[in-house]
Image (cartoon, rainbow, N blue to C red; front, side, top):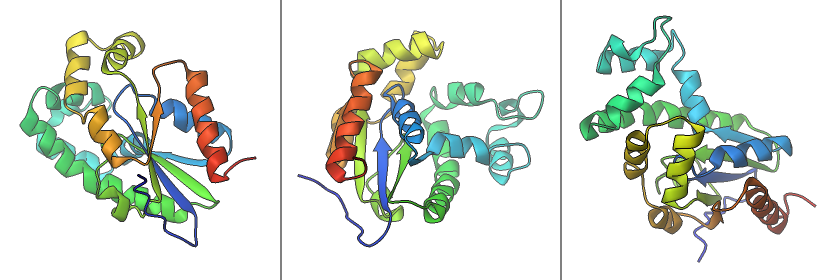
Length: 207
């Protein structure tokens, strides 16, 4: 049964949930190629942690200057290695970053124009529906063993690091319970794009 909030009278807002390696970026890139507004929480996090940004200073205060590269950029790979091997550090990171990222997403959605806007949220939570005034949630899902293979092959992660990242996130079943639609990405990218096209057509967002 659909959990869609259905905020009437304005631009529809659809979140793309999904764990690391699930294929959210593939969907976002495809939607952008079709002319849709498509935001990505990871890209917003990148913007908010550029040199001189308040969030970067907060992260340095919390985790030390070791999280910076020699040219004062956030060393995301190093920070990820720290937090995904320490549950307390991961909770601290989430507590620091979730608020600013959520605020920035809301602002960008409010500024967006068009019939529908999408936003990819890796760590989707039920409260995001109300906070972001979402109409629907689509969960991009892949079998854990395939996600593991993709992280090792495509992102050059070690097997151990990839496993820790996957285990730190919600399961596919947990995401499915929060979603209105599930996009299975166990096949190739063309199959995933075809599923996106089907949903866009069903909702009347394309001919």
